[in-house]
Image: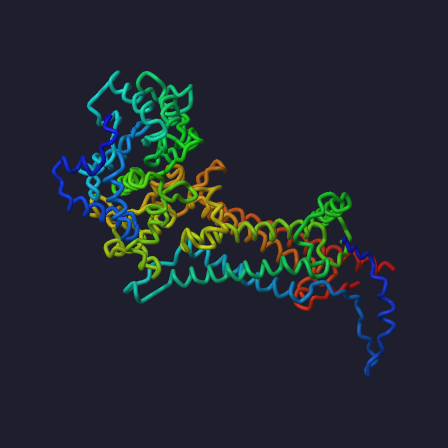
Length: 365
Length: 247
């Protein structure tokens, strides 16, 4: 670090990558981001002239699956490209420095690149007991996060933890684990949810920000539109079976073998925004539905608290019992139906009695 | 606005005006009032039909029919069920909107289901009377030209509010398929700011359906019962528009 003028291009040239390969990378990146053909030249120009963007990568309450995913990116290759493209100044999981040395880098970056560095956060801060459930460098993580967020250009919230809260925020959330956007409110935050997010989505987002110096277009939830504007369901290769009404009814039935739609097995594809059905995983090899298992909706808010991964309808726990909306509705409608029938019966009896009274009264005259 | 008709005054004059037919029999003249204008009646039946279609197809979307055999290209079962649901949903939305617009130009009965006069003491007194009537504590029902106060309260919550909720959540869910740049998403995407996970919107949409099922049951029962017990036409009024009082 310290080489403020060093560009991405100069770094990869030094590593022996040819100019031809560099341009191939630029076109590939432009394509994967869904940008037009002119964008390739813009990316090349930016990477040749702009200084590398410093990135601080912090870890709160998390499982490091985001990092594991990130380092497996195939397009662009994280080893060759992304780590050259950005200046990853601090990442306590993979950096060589430790202890005092490591903490010094934080201070240095903060002072030197005030308002220019990107803060990438994996995991989230627990707020209970003054943040004591996650101590990082002798201080509660939430304090470290707030300090580093203060001078950041933008914040990337990696994964379901940083974006929504994920498993540590699932009910009853004893540590009060809180997503980043509920703690930091005065900085642009880009959510890249998923448990973990797709490697290519992560590197794609980093590439976009470092290339254009701004956040990509975000949707209502703060997710990049280029990867999160459609549901798994919208681009699922099993969608024709859904429309035809061909469903797997139970695991290992004939329909499962034929690769029918997993809707009835609780697939969350219709309610999950992610790029799994297009970008896929492990270098485009497969994704859960292709492997015969429904989507569990890992990039959605509170996906741990919606009941079984294998139920179509969400479990409702508000009534002290675990039922889904249709079961609750049927009981309620049944009760109303019974009440209506009872009311009608009483009405009929009453009416007969009244009529008899009236008839008796007439006879008495 | 309350239209409590204790005992229509023109009954006797009506009777007197009717002449005997050839057999010497008199037709019974009954006081009638024109209540539901044509647009109100059309909206009522179109919406009723749409709601029934929506309930059946909606349930089948959540709990699909058994698997169809053969090539995927050979059938379109789920596709047709969803098409029917979306089509009926749009019909309901259009006719519900038309019904709201009619409330501005129609007679005062056409406005009744869109508000509850919460500030009027008399209204709540009459609601109480209606509750007592349904609890078999009152011997004689009151007669109203339009909805009775309890019915007005039920129509406002059970129909106007619930249907609005279903249209809003319905279009929000529909916008997921139409895409983030669709007008549906621009108009109803804010629903996902309340429930970021659309799974929750689905759950509420299901619960809303069951609330409407209950409304329909009570609505149909009350209409039939009042037709018999309150000695005034209810069901035929929604066809002819006229309310007849029998005594």
